[in-house]
Each structure stands twice: as C-alpha cells, then as structure tokens.
Amino acid sequence: MQAEMEAMTRHRLIPVIALDREEDALPLARALEAGGLPCAEVTFRTPAAAGAIRAIANAMPQVALCAGTVLTTDQVDRAVDAGAKMIVAPGFNPRVVEHCLRLGVPVLPGCCTPSDIEAALSFGLDTVKFFPAQAAGGVAMLKALTAPYRMMRFVPTGGINADNVTDYLRLPCVAACGGSWMVKSDWIRAGAFDEITRVTAQAVALVNGLQA
Image 1 (cartoon, rainbow, N blue to C red):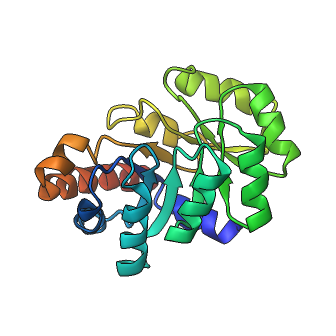
Image 2 (image 1 turned 180 degrees about the vertical axis):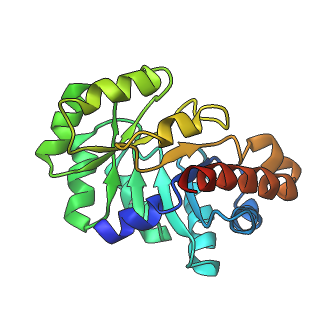
C-alpha cells in the first residue's frame, strides 16, 4: 500500500478532474503526461468517472491513477474494478476506510479536525487528505494540526491554485497537493488540451523550483 501512496505523491501535485465524457479521458491524461504530470484523480462527481478511469488504466498503465470523491463502498468497488490504484474521499467515512483496507487499497480520507485525524490514526493511516484546505484555515490550520500530530502527512485539496500551492508544499507535513486549476472543466469540454499541457508544465516548474 505504501508503494502506491508514494507513486501518487511522488510528483507532489495531483490533478483533480471531473469528466463529463469518457472520450475526454485519454486526451486529458496524455496532456497531463506531456506537461510532466503522469498522475490523476478522477472524481466520482459524474457518471463518466468509472469509464474514464478504465480508459486511462488500460491505455496508460504508467499513469498513477486514483478515484476521488468516493462516498460509498460500492463506488470503491467500481473504482478498483476500473483500475484505480488509490481511493480519495472528501470526508472520513469509517465504512469506506475499512472497506479499502480490507481490499488492500490505499485510501486518503478527508480530514480537517483533530477528531478526524485521530479517527484516521485509529485505522493505522499515516497520510490523509486535508479538505477543504483553504476554507478550513489553510496553511495556518495545517501548522496548528501538525503540532500534536507530527506523525501525520497531509494532501491539501480545495482552493489550491498556482498562487498558494508553494505555501503548502513548503510545509514538511505536506506530501502533495491536489488541485484543479490545471484541468479546468471548460478547457476539457472545449478540447483545449494544449492549454492543459501548458499550465501543467508551469505547475510542475513551480514544484521543481522548490526542490532546486
């Protein structure tokens, strides 16, 4: 499980995607890879999610692929069957977490309070999603949470953009950030995949600049 988690967080950026059409899945994944980001979180906010995950998993197995906005155990099963390697949830649902652990699938439940984090720790988790990051207090809140929970790593998502992503990534407790600014739904619907590649490359450059 740890290997899959590391694969998802290696690039320190996870594009959070909502796809209305399955046929956009492969062009989008190729655009992300061309921009230097071969990973994606395809959210279960649309009926196209499972089909999109399957299309990417079958054609581009090198892409680190997870399913997001997973709310039920049924969605976990559909996502894993389609080829998702990790499950991401907006909140902490014990049934979803327990089901993922039973299947041996890495899970990032959403946490934004000490009680959420302690629930995650009780399941043996050491990495969680911090959501909704900006609305829940942003960098200041994460710094406060890290004081008593130094063993926990976070993937902030929600309100993350090119202007604030480096503020989060500079925190030692942050494994990666999830964001949708490089995969805007309007661009996907318009087929503006060159624009997605361009903005993705800019985002990757920001991260690389931190590591230089």
